[in-house]
Length: 80
Image (tube, rainbow, N blue to C red; front, top):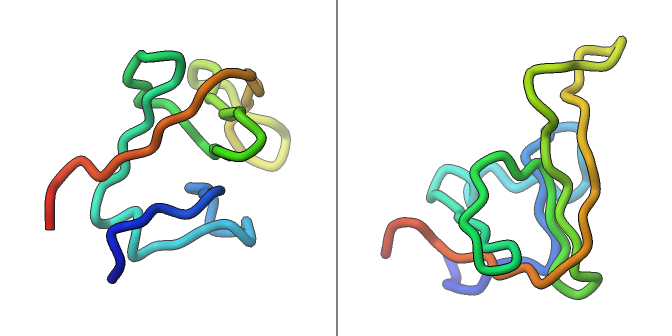
């Protein structure tokens, strides 16, 4: 496995940007210099993250999210 993270990654298995192997390794996200733990999806080239909003879900059972713009820096939580 390479040590480079993709430009876009999602934790939703239904998304085309989902990668189970990378998520098992542990990914951290720095958004505007703050470590975020509630990131559903990110895109580095477009500078946005999609964050979950509390425990609310939509009618299909997916978490409600909000999309925020700003600098995104993904990193591996554990070296391998």
